[in-house]
Length: 90
Image (cartoon, rainbow, N blue to C red):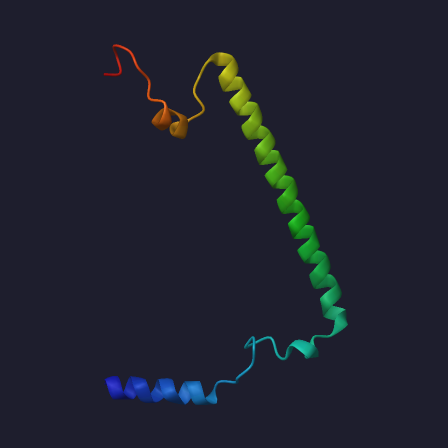
């Protein structure tokens, strides 16, 4: 059974094309008609990711400022680094 698996693995390795990126053809064969929309889509997605990340950072900053105004800690990491003290936290 192991020999069958090794045999068929060797057959697949021999018959598999030896290209840099299997399934996408040769790098020089990419037509420019496809490259334009793909690049535009990639730029759009990257722009949206940057915008969403900026929104997340802004909301985290606002949340942390609200916690500071109420005198609360910043979360789990702050609690681990600065454990609360007092009669209830022994």
